[in-house]
Image (cartoon, rainbow, N blue to C red):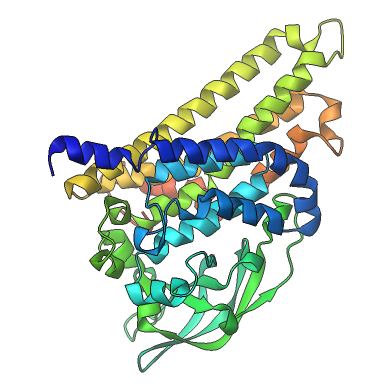
Amino acid sequence: MTAHEEIKAMNEYSMGSPRAEQLLQAARDLQPVLRERAELCKQLRRVPDETFADFQAAGFFKVLQAEQYGGYAMDPQVFYAVGLELAKACMSSAWVLGVVAVHNWQLALFDDQAAQDVWGDDPTTLLSSSYAPVGKVKLVEGGFRLSGRWSFSSGSEHCKWVFLGAVVPTEEAPFDMANYRTFLLPIEDYEIVDNWDVVGLQGTGSHDIVVEDAFVPEYRTHKVIDAFNCDNPGNAVNTAPLFRIPFMQVFVRAVCTASLGALEGSLDAYVEVAKTRVAGPVPMRDDPNAKMLAAEVKAEIEQMKLVMYRNFDNMLDCARAGEPIPIEDRIRYRYDSAIVADRCLELSGRMLKAVGSGGIRNGSEVLARHLDILASQAHVANHSTPFAVNMGGVLLGQDNADFGL
């Protein structure tokens, strides 16, 4: 293949391609629908079935899915651009799309037999997850016995399989995160416990998952060390550069992108309030502080987008060249992702304060989005402190202490 042919092929999967533009337009077209369903989503405590049907029809779940199962295997930038558009209208819906559809990418990293188990009869089958390393594992012939209770499995009621986290014990190390794995189970092997009652992201349906002594064959597990080394069993059949970038770098964007999109939607709501609010001698639209805040939030949003897209550009460049991504860069990319939630919450809070007393009324879009962004900080991937400590330590000459990069 010539260099020109390689660039043309790459562009078919990238931002700006005809398919990417179609996906983005489909997301924009769904924004009014998602706004209309936002209250229903909140009341149901899960994304409505109609919204999942719309996402399936638009092809959103195919964006990161391997082509052999009908997916598009596109660059992650396309997937997260779609998520940004959806989150402007309903953060819960965008959050669930992000964390459910990204599983279609991770499944391509498993041994291909696992993907055949899930998609052999129906390639539109979906997976939820809970990656906390709380499972109890016993080694048995051919695989493992898994038990435990996991929380925060977003979108679980719409899924037929689940990814669950656990550490495989050894005689030398009963609990060593270097032995962490993701375990893949069918719905027959677990129970969904309806217990989602929260102040933000109410529509994500992030219920508990309970497993009692289920058998999981070896091939239905994915080692964290393989993900860290970007050398996974699934790479034997899924050879595209997309599947040669680190698992956690892709996954964590699913839990910060929704916050960024919601902040952009909150800015739109703030602007609408500012255009008409009068709470003193100077209308809000003429208040220099109100104008400066709008400008600052807009600039911060665009800066965060650029950083996220740039980081993926750099990682894909390495993957396409068959070169490892420098560990220093991976550490920084991980921190760049985690601080998005912090920035979004801070800026959202300032807009909420600026719109005045009306902002605390039920029905306030600025308040609703602020509570959703606040709730997003509960996800461990959005806890920026450990990633800052790791990055700072490496800058000071210490060894990397994180395999989840």
